[in-house]
Image (cartoon, rainbow, N blue to C red):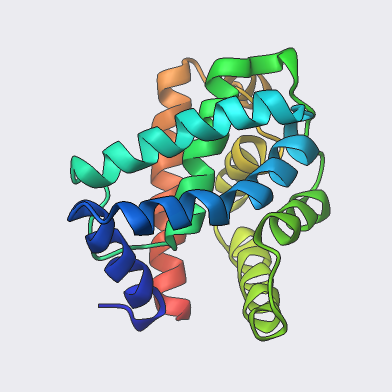
Length: 191
């Protein structure tokens, strides 16, 4: 078990075992950061952010309960929840509120706002950002381009297919998956 996520794995097991107090505490803990993230990244007002948050948290809970998320964790619970929330916002609100994040620095400032790091966590965050920058440079130009278009610029698969001259959206998803796998292997070696 990765000691970095062992505390989150304990929380995950508590939630899976029906600890409603822990679930309530997590629900309250993640709200403010998610509200800031939704406003800054997508321009959601508080009412729409709360709607997205409630639905995303419900999906998060069912993913734990139905064992779609189980140990060993490859990210923190918070990171996983924010990914579920972001996907929910993109799926249900689409371009109605969407504000494009144009570069890596904007994405990192959103990440800092959403996570509100403590001083001790700041150095971990800086190390992670530097690692991501370095690995994106090493992963290869095509992989870097598809990952930047997908996760930093948040382009839809059809737009990525057009920009990169890829024949289908399915091919975009497959290439992105392969690039992410390559990046994960590189990150394991870097650790």
